[in-house]
Image (cartoon, rainbow, N blue to C red; front, side, top):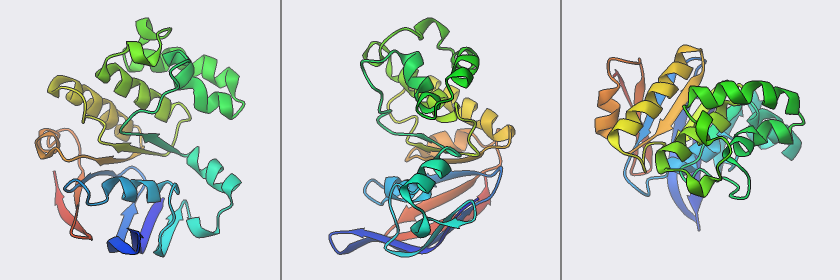
Length: 224
């Protein structure tokens, strides 16, 4: 589904990480941990072709990312839902309009109308549908970001520190939604520095913990 084969990436001539290999199989669940600055966000961006590896190969659904045109990348990204750390909403649009935006851009407005009510209910944001993003709490914004990421029914959901700006109760609620998606067959990759949060999921999901540190990716191998 998504495969990184011996990749390297760096900035300003300095390697951030090298020799990294990773395979995200259909229906798998992965946590990516590591200290700040280790390159977790960069690794995620490579997984959805927002960056291109300096060395090695990134394959997305069987296609080498280096060979893809801009239009092909755009089409593949419809199969990958991304929850950004800063949520990245358009503040002049309502939260419902923001969530529906991927389908609107893809000229699938009828689907947006059909799916939006259900999605808003799923993330418990029905009453906030008409509000603007700045009017929402941090937890509400994160739930809206998750709804936007899955409105295209992607095969893979990638989340960058989705619980970083919310309290413990809300982080558990967000993770429960991601576990539910995994049980529906979605592949999940979550970057987080919160090991306590990972441990709290032990009884809910079979996942693997990947640690990025010192330029290397260590696959813990043990199931949570």
